Image (cartoon, rainbow, N blue to C red):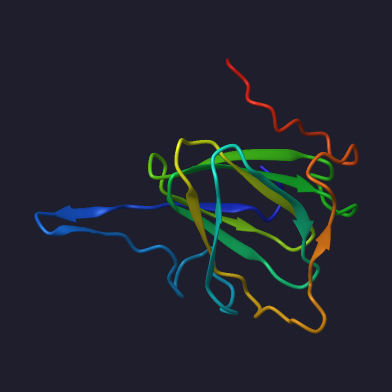
Length: 151
């Protein structure tokens, strides 16, 4: 796994009224700081990639649908430089993934319905000077093919 990436398997607690599921707690080992909370969605087959942050970590949790979340370590001083990680997150696999600063990330909705991702970054978004550095989803600078693979 890419250096600094952490996961937390989530535990839905069901009862006859519905369910409850804690996502991120201040006493979790993957928690560092709170910046803000927001959601982003993707329609089936849509890829939203690539970007990284210099000053913040992200915590992704897919609440509805399913997403393939892909990470690429662009940090030259990292022991996992140029490593790629792939995670399938969502209703069939409730997990939080901590994405450290300097790691490119993106996602693709792999289900038949719109997927919704909750993010808890460690810093609030700065509209005047965004901490966001982008490459196109199909760049040749990242060794990843977003095509569906039928194993």
